Image (cartoon, rainbow, N blue to C red; front, side, top):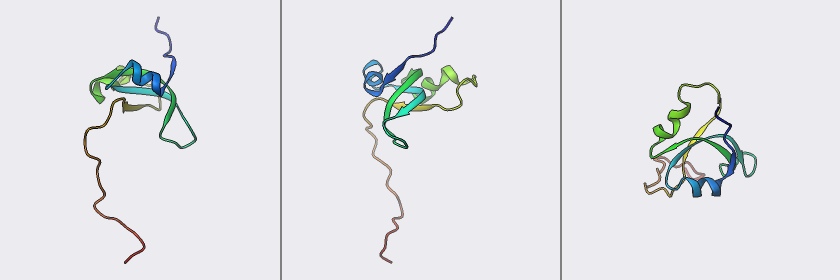
Length: 88
C-alpha cells in the first residue's frame, strides 16, 4: 500500500532532488499569491518535465499540480517584443 507523500519545504525538495524537474501537489506559497513555495508534496520527479509528470498522468487524484525545476535556469529569459509605457 502506497502512503501519501510528505510535505517538504522548498529547501528540502532542492536538497533531495538537485537539478531535477519535480511534480508538486498541495503547494503552500510563502505568502498568498506568491510564486515562492513554502511547502509542497512531491508526486513525481525526473530529468524532464514529462518524466516528472508521468506518475500522475493517468490519474484524476490531483486536480491541481505543478512541475518546476529545482536547479538554476541556464536559458536566457524571454523578453517582451512590445513595451507599453506612458510615453507615446
